[in-house]
Amino acid sequence: MKMEKEELQELRGELERLTAFIRGVEGDSLPYFYHCFDAMKNNIEIYFYVGSEDGEDLFPVLERDWTASHRMFIGVQHYDIRKEHPGADPELCFYFARLLAGVGRHFERTE
Image 1 (cartoon, one colour):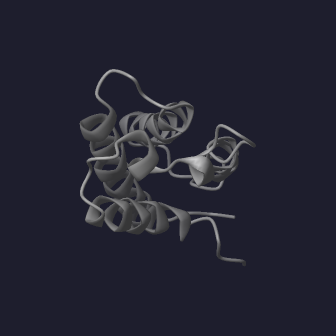
Image 2 (image 1 turned 45 degrees about the vertical axis):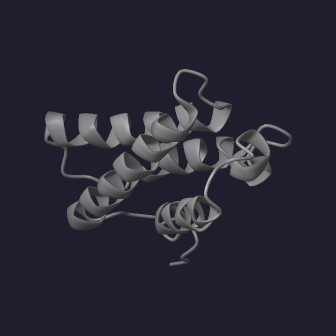
């Protein structure tokens, strides 16, 4: 599958917001899946820095990291903000879900 530059820029922005949110909530104790999202963001930045024109080569790498972020037992699907931080505002859970869905929609389409 190929991602156009505009879509990659959008995905990079969504990953930046997601990783900033996770860093803000977790501080120095970052969960496993954070590193997958950070790697995705960095790979997109490298793609733009190098000036590549072929987004088709990048998509499998991004998809690999997206899949890795959902590993059994340590993936993002098992992350519960309220469990990790009982005093956290319940709205943070919904905000996190929205950020995650924004990234996920790029990997749920079929071509």
